[in-house]
Picture 1 (cartoon, rainbow, N blue to C red):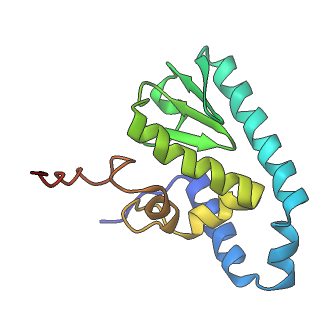
Picture 2: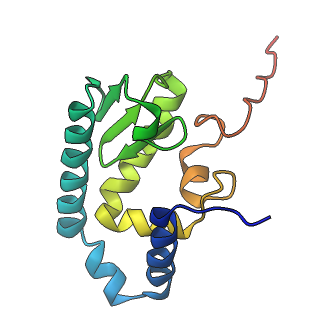
Length: 151
């Protein structure tokens, strides 16, 4: 049975493949601090605008802007971080926000180039390097391991 992929996912995968083929000076240029910072700002403001247009409730949690109360079609999975903005319906537990804050820092580091890099890593959260870096348990991809009892 063929897996249906949205046009956006297909485009992202192709751009991601292109991104994997770039190396050295080209990659350093597009992820240079001033370029990445500008992309991070653009992504953050675009996501905030999206959340506001859809009537979300905005609040600040550390350096992460959280916009909740959004329709489920407005983001991926349980929520999506774009720049420093986390878009969600209701996934705002401390663990989820810690996971999403790692994504905020990834956006900060790579700017708009984070988009193809994320897609290039694959859409399976269990094998996507960016989700692994953000913490699979914190993000709800894996059940939490029980903490050892301390006597």
